[in-house]
Amino acid sequence: MKDQRSTFRHRFILDRHLYLMLLPVILFYFVFKYAPMVGEIIAFKDYRLGDGIFGSPWVGFKHFESLFGSIDFWRVLRNTLVLNVYSLVFGFPVPIVLALLLNEVRKEWYKRTVQNLLYLPHFISWVILGGIFIAILSPSTGIVNTVLVNVFGIEPIYFMADSRWWPVAYTVSGIWREAGWGTILYLAAMASIDPQLYEAAKIDGASKLRQMWHITLPGIRSTIAILLVLRMGSMLDVGLEQTLILQNQSVLDVADVISTYVYRVGLQNMSYSYTTALGLFQSLVSFILVVSVNRLTRAFGERGLW
Image 1 (cartoon, rainbow, N blue to C red):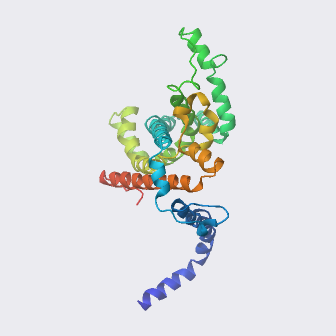
Image 2: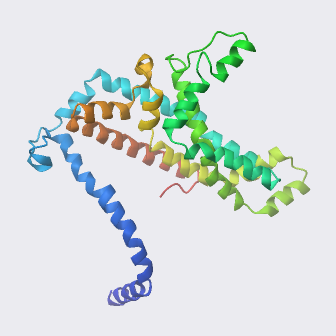
Image 3: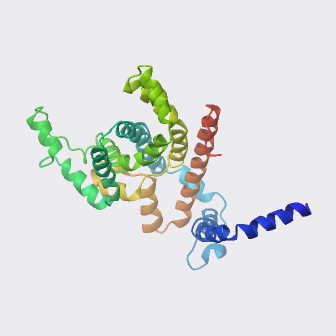
């Protein structure tokens, strides 16, 4: 035991510069991630600004009972899940496909140009990107409806004002902004695949598609699994900025999600305890999803997150 302590002290002194560099990161997480968790107890209190977090009276599960008895809660939960399922089913595979295609491009200048164009939307704020997207889908002047009317003879579609089309437009806008950025990790994973595997496949007469299927995809399988686990952790979380920019009164029945509900009820109506209860519910469900999918991933032979 004494030898172990001596060894630990020796290693700590030896790597003291690395531990010193780690200190700001630990402080960041402590101050901005862990310390605010103390405020979660207001979900079990009738929080009043004058009494503070610790002075407000305890009310047990009163806010959770109000939450689960509210029609609005089940409506925003349904909308949140629908938008996230759309994003998962249609949005998650897009960066993988783009990365597979970019990996096969041999002209470096062309590859870099396409990559930069794909990354660009990620750096544009939702305020600007949402305005561009709404203009593109405009029923009177938008390019999409112009093509639909003049080429296919279809009546203009009110994408942003129709409850059936709004979730589709929302999902496409999200894919447009983040798909290119999401290819970075997959391209990095593809770069670590042994080139000799491709050479051997070529000698055996494997086509490009077979090389993708039997070499590239298995090579990035663990990266896909980890990103899927991380993605499941945000299944009850929809970007507030994107939703606020794209939603309007005519589609509120499908566009009102948990984040906008928390913003409206929690901040504007000052129902802090009620929305904190909702936040705790979100965190609990996300935790269960991450643990479940991680265990499923490990059952399929991948390493998972832990």
